[in-house]
Image 1 (cartoon, rainbow, N blue to C red):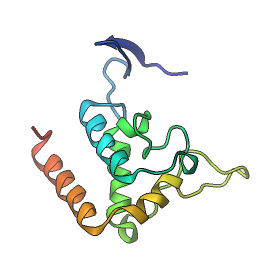
Image 2 (tube, helix red, strand yellow):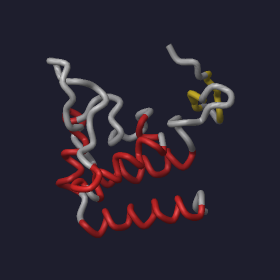
Image 3 (cartoon, helix red, strand yellow):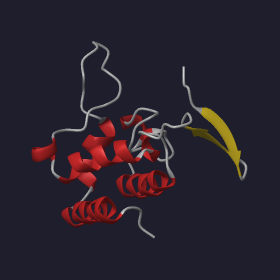
Image 4 (cartoon, rainbow, N blue to C red):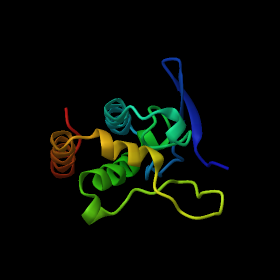
Amino acid sequence: MSDGYFSVFQGDVILLPPPGRNINWPTEEGRDVGKILADAIQCPTHQMCTDCVFRHGSFPNQCESTLDDAMSCMIDPKENGKFLCNHPDDGGETRVCGGYKHALTKIDPALRKMFLVRQAAISQFGRTA
C-alpha cells in the first residue's frame, strides 16, 4: 500500500517517505505545527476521523502541506474555501472536515492572525529556529 519505509528513532517508529520523495509526508516542522494546531483546537475525538489533520499525532497532522491547506481555510474561509474531509460520507459525497468545523468555533481572530504571520515567515525565510 505505501511505498514508504519505517525507521526507529529514539524508541519511536516513524514512517518515512520513499527515497527521493518528501511531498506531503510528516516532517519535524509539520509535527511541531500540528501539535500547536491540535492543542489550540482541542476538538472532541468523536467529531474527527482517526486520521484528521486536527487530531494530534495523526499522519496528516504532521504533514506541512496538509497543515498549510487546513490553516489557510481556517484563516480565510471566504478566500480559500472550506477544508474538506479525506473521507467521503456514507453516500460517497465530499463533506466538510469535522475538525475544521470545530476549529472555526475555537480559533479567535488573534490566533488566526498568528498562524498567518508564522506561515508567511516560514514561506519567506524557510524553517524557523
